[in-house]
Length: 516
Image (cartoon, rainbow, N blue to C red; front, side):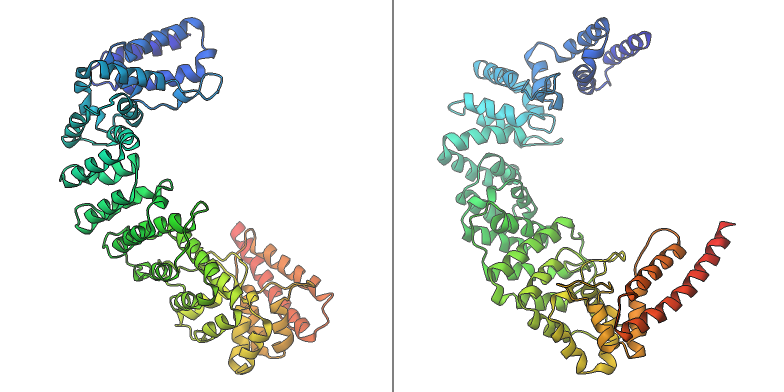
């Protein structure tokens, strides 16, 4: 307890210093009392309470800074963990005091229009509900106009939300005036998002973006929530065109995000258009590895979602997208990066049109080492991720007769080539064909095919001692051979096991050497 008293004394001393962040101290005391208060000795708890009360204060300005300036998680739960709202009644009381005495608000406006007002939106909304004629609005706008240090429209957005709800026509007129204000129009996208979105509002923002009066980057805020879904499709498509024609580095990401919400989201009521969707998915900006801002995980997610929705809605015309994907397949740091989520779209198209997709693939396959596109396509067909982990090989999506027909046109080159990228798992299942085994059965009499498949089978990653890995592979192959009847398959297993014996011996020597 002596230590607790010392801590309290120290905090009390700090509170007397001018440089001390009293807001942070108050927040810490509130958290302490909320989580630990019931376990503290009564006199220690009382001492913390005695420190807290002066920090909160009882005058209007102090209470504003506590309940409007602070947004604490602890204010939403009581000490038993039940969800409560311990702030709203204070906010409403403060708003009512302003209506009764507007002069109280003036000294607070300087920080209310900054990010210091963590509960500013709630206070602005409570104030707007009580200011029936919106007489305070000119003063709020003037304060916002002169905010220079960490400005925020959180407070003003809450106030304008009430104006939108009570008098939408007046809100539209006010927004028109804001669009003409060189200082305030930069905030119009956020104010629109916080207060209300209409077709007229969307056109207003579109005009500002087309005139370069606002950065198209501000459109990203409309990806939060589903507000964008309420505007008419013709206006939304114009938003997308403005984004696609912009040089802003994040423009394509914002376009994908908004497009996904507008058309693909589970609550969307809009039918996905074919032409504009295909145009968005095949934008040249998605293929620029040297772009200023790299694509992120959500860009791949949105692209794949839109792509799959397009393929499902227009299956007969999905080959154009597949052809574009294959043409740029595997290009690093692009939307078609190897084994990104976007490849699921190609899988869906392949399931719909296996024969056509194989024709598109066959045009691009080749055994030249410098053909990186063919290399990435074969990795996709085999099923191998960038870090060597196995995935389901897309080769299994094609009719096996189609594959044999392609190989048989040039067995000398294509048989061993196929063995190099066939999914390497060996198995026996009644309802599933093991393509690797079928390749060995059909072409395994050729030494080059067996050798090529050995290189394929050897690839991959593992954890643990190298020798144990090889011994496990050897054991699995010998178990598989026990029920194998085909001579080509057994010949390959015998040859590969002989290689494994050599690998095991060398691995053990390295492991013994490294142990010393």
